[in-house]
Image (cartoon, rainbow, N blue to C red; front, side, top):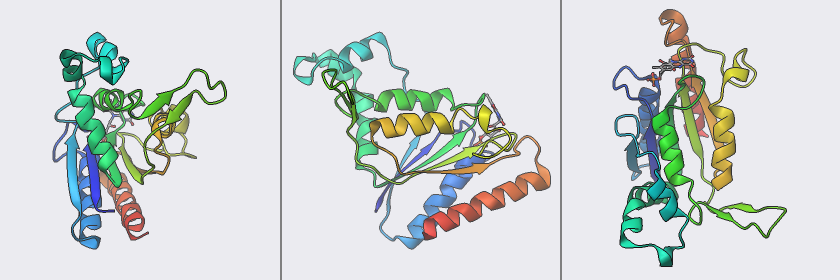
Length: 210
Ligand SMILES: Cc1cc2nc3c(=O)[nH]c(=O)nc-3n(C[C@H](O)[C@H](O)[C@H](O)COP(=O)(O)O)c2cc1C
C-alpha cells in the first residue's frame, strides 16, 4: 500500500476544510508508512476538461480504429485513469456543492468512467451487461459542507446526493471499499465547526490506525 492518489476538489486553498483534512490523512499515513508515494490531482484548482462530442466519438471507437486525433482527445482521460489504476489507496476531499459533487469533480468522474478501460459493456449478457474492470482499493472520501447532518442517519441525508452518487458510480467501475468522513458547519463557524473538525480528525486517525 505505498501509492496514494490524493484528489482535492475544492477550489479554495488554505480556507478549505476538505483540503486540510486530505493533507492530514496523507501526513498521518506517510508517517506510519515510510516510502509512501503521493500523487496529487488537484481538480479544484485545475478542473479536468468536460467531455465533448469528439471525446465521446473517440472513446466509443475500438482502439485499433482510433485516429491520431482521436487518441489525442483521450490523452487526459488516459492520464487520469493511469493515476487511479496505479494507486493502492485513494483519498478524496470533496466540498458539498448544491447537495452534490462540484462540477470539476464530476468532470473527473466523466473522464475516468470509460468503456473498455474502467468498465465493459456486453449487451448480449442480459443479466449483467456492465462489468467493472478496476481492482478494488480503499477509498476515503472527506465531504465538507456549510451546514451539517448530511451523513447517513443525519437529518439531511435525504438531501445528500454526493454519497449515494459515489456509492453508485465508483462500484460501477469496481471501487467498492468506500469510507466517508464528514465535516460540517463551515457556514456557522465557532464551536460547532471546531467540534466537527475535531471529530473528522479523530475519525481519520482511527481509519489510518486501522
Ligand atoms: C457553490 C457552493 C454550493 C454550496 N452548496 C452547499 C450545500 O448544498 N449544502 C451545504 O451544506 N453547504 C454548501 N456549500 C458550502 C460548502 O459545502 C462549504 O463551504 C464547504 O466547507 C466547502 O468545502 P471546502 O471547505 O473544502 O472548500 C456550498 C458552497 C458553495 C461555494
